Image (cartoon, rainbow, N blue to C red; front, top):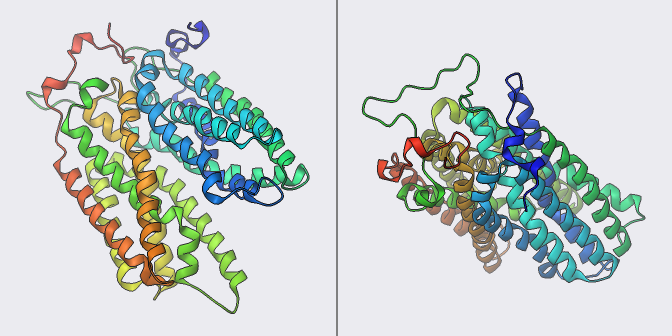
Length: 451
């Protein structure tokens, strides 16, 4: 049963609507669902003796399931997002994500951790997937002149969500009397209600451009002689093309290379720069290192994706993959000989990690057009689900098998170099999509649906 208020036809923008209201609408969703990156705060609290005292493996389950559901829901529901429009998708994201937090609150109040897994992981994870892809195609249509910048602004919000959620969650614990089942339950409840209000702003603000709308003063690029004037490839056809799978490999290795450092950042820093005489200061510095990586992860999503509008998507991925491999080579050869250069190398790698997420929607637009680009993006995000397992597995398995110290990470870094080289080759092999995969021009609506 459809809700008329959420229909695409109800959110076609009037002629005087400012397109600069669309990025804040997208940010309202992405800053909220970016709370997922702050799960470690809940993980530590639930693992403590003052709460359930569960193992690290058990308390990782809600987050792991949420990331899996993010990829699956984005892939399976991406076509519905294109057909029903961004307001419907954002409203569904609000419903699932905030319901997941409320179910988690009930789980902690009732001392039933399986409800936290169900709520945060399964239900909330569906909200993550719908929210992540909901504004993508809309932003690209509003900013055909700067698609990389537009999607970078929104996806920057997902990377920066933890910068808000982590201190907020800690403050809520303190407000509710410290770490305990009751305090964690009240924190889940407060976040669920608060994020619902915040995400509702995005639902209200979002609009789609009218048919034929273009930015003032912008002229669409003229197609080369003999080329099709516009590209329109359906999600069903896109997955049949080598371009989709080559880009899937590119995203997979770029995410794997970044998340391998991000997931074990604190441990990497303490192993590279130990100080037995002052372990407390090392631990504090490691926390700062993690914060810097999170900041560059967030900023890279906006900065490098904006650069891609100037130099092109293929060239900017050459940088992500090629320079990323060289930085890993530096870490492998010189390890901890220079702390400043180590920090710079790690931060740049993490900026490429975030930028890979932000740039890929514009890359998809270049290859497949705006028709069903959100659905295609959803299918591509399955690479993230695989990388979320592969990256930590590579780094942790290799590092845990070695002796303490910097050398334990070198085989993992060399593995990342090889993966990035594979991604570099895959990027070089990407060519324009063959005309046989295009939709007939007369059958494609500007809103991404068949007439």
